[in-house]
Image (cartoon, rainbow, N blue to C red; front, side):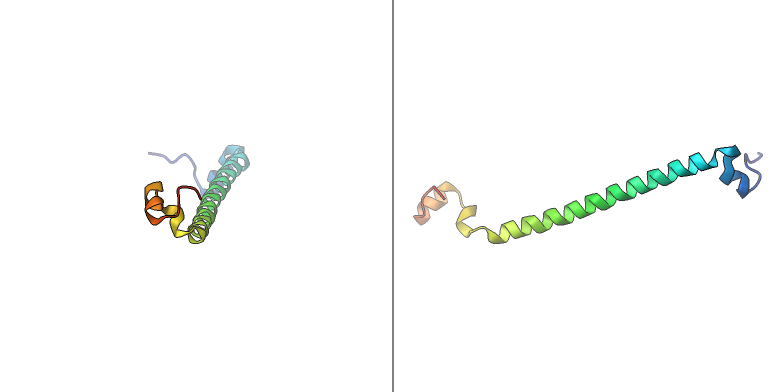
Length: 77
């Protein structure tokens, strides 16, 4: 079995198309990295927002209407 490229330089140049090939690989890896970073940062900000929201709600806000009536707070907020 004979390798397609005889040395590393031929592999990098890819018969004159190396610049296009490696640019495509670079753009793809950068785009994937940005998408991963964005997803992680959105997840963190959503968790923080939900924790803030959970800390600011009153205990009666999490009750059902039946439980509010039993406590005498009424069904409306």
